[in-house]
Image (cartoon, rainbow, N blue to C red; front, side, top):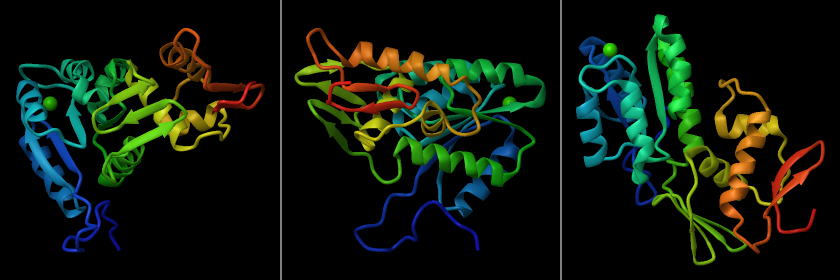
Amino acid sequence: MEGGIAPAPEAGTTTLPKPLVLIVEDEAALATMLRYNLEKQGFRVDEATDGQEALTRIAENTPDLVLLDWMLPVVSGIEVCRQIRRRPGTRDLPVIMVTARTEDQDAVRGLNTGADDYITKPFSMDALLARMRALLRRSNSVPAKGRLVFHDISMDLAMHRVQRGARAVHLGPTEFRLLEFLMQHPRRVFSREELLDAVWGPDIHVEPRTVDVHIRRLRKSINGPGELDIVRTVRAAGYALDTEPV
Ligand code: CA
């Protein structure tokens, strides 16, 4: 039984839109193979064959996820990724970098530029689909994005806006996802490893201390002067979103 990520069509008003994937790939045969398999798995597919076209497609019809080839004509994959992260409307758009084996070092650089994950050619469809599903779950693209509220903080997931009281809060992509995850589970304490799995994904190897760095950045942005620190550090356990004093 093949499991598609999208529900069956024609299921009435509760039917969720099929997730839209933008394939950015200059190898026509690979793009065709990806389109065929992704459509079979219940995705809608859009295509671009170079970096410039990718940016245009994203601006015209923002996908739920981008499969981004590293080596592209006109504008490189890394530059496309950088621009996706720079634009407010796509700052948190899930991006999977597709690289050739010889570009592995670059892929690591891609992650630093803001790609959420990467996969090395040749790859199996199963491996790709697992990564895509994990990312889509994390990014909350399925189901439709909504609003999260905790204490005096609100997150508009569709608009990528965070507010504390009347103040607009600007967060980097990782801090945004971190806050989103914590706001989905208020008051629950998560270890660094749990946060890494939930926010970065189980396939990405980063030091647990990285979590501390991003928590520090999150605190700096979300806690204005005189405002309550809503991130609780639980000694030897991890972090929680909480309004109770430590
Ligand atoms: Ca290529």
